[in-house]
Amino acid sequence: MNVFGEKWSFTSFGESHGAAIGGVLDGVPAGLSIDLSMIRSELEKRAGKGQTGTSPRAKNEPDEVEWLSGVMERTKDEGQRTKELVTLGTPIAFIIRNQDARPEDYEWLRHNYRVGHADKVYELKYGIRDWRGGGRASARETAARVVAGCIAKQQLAAKGITIRASLVQVGAETDPDKFAETIAAYQRDGDSIGGIVECHINGLPVGTGEPIFNKLQAELAFAVMSINACKGFEYGTGFGGVSQPGSAINHISGGIAGGISDGSEIVFRCVFKPTPSTPKAGVKGRHDACVATRAVPVVEAMTALALVNLL
Image 1 (cartoon, helix red, strand yellow):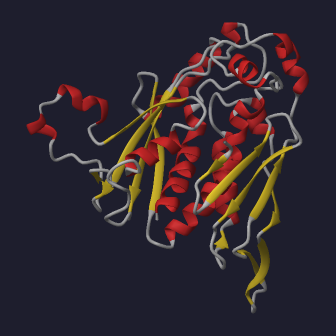
Image 2 (cartoon, helix red, strand yellow):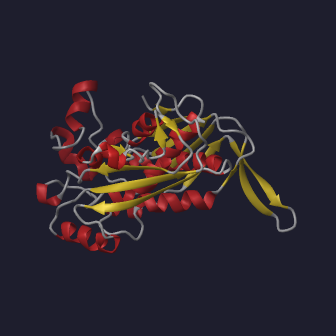
Image 3 (cartoon, one colour):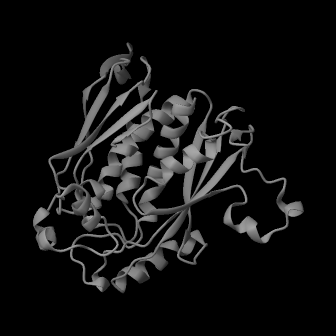
């Protein structure tokens, strides 16, 4: 399926080296003013502008959003004649054109499968695959998620709910001041490294989530684990809690008890594997030395989409 959510749904479409990627949003209320500067900023973070070890393609794509439906421009301030983009309550459709696609770089994949990628299983499942950079399996698709997530975050912010994610570990390194040099070292060696992103949710009202199959942590994990290269999710005491006695950690909830928010700050972490396609592995193409750096805004986006549906 390419649809996330039922009450507030996001449909993702497009391939890595196709004409465009994009999305359709349904369930967004009318009258929501869209912060375009926020969307531009988050797309730049996802593209890794100014970051070390980012795919050259990501830096070259302008990622300009074209709004096709569901919004209209109106005058915000009659005196200064400033404009704003406002939702109409109808389905919102948008596209981001692929302007730096180079399918010829992946010509060798017509008859070859990359180790650690979805190439082979896609072909086994569907009988056909888009070998141009992985098609739908490419992280290029996450740009559309960021746009959708920004709109969801703006709706949540109106309710006093904030979402903030950050990179907290690269390989074994936990000092943020050393992340860039760590990634650069792997890049110089033609290799890659993984990382951990931590996310903080504040302002979520007590009672969000259900006690059995729609537990809050389950919905968050479902959303975050759908992100490319994400290999693990933990909240509260997480995996580290297994080595601690219950008497020492029984007060740590992570903001969730019995699948329901308890009103305190929610903190979760997710781990992203190293990029399997590297020059050291003999793989051609434009790749990231550490995908976790660009995953931060995507984690925020998917978190927002999960929460706006639960609320």
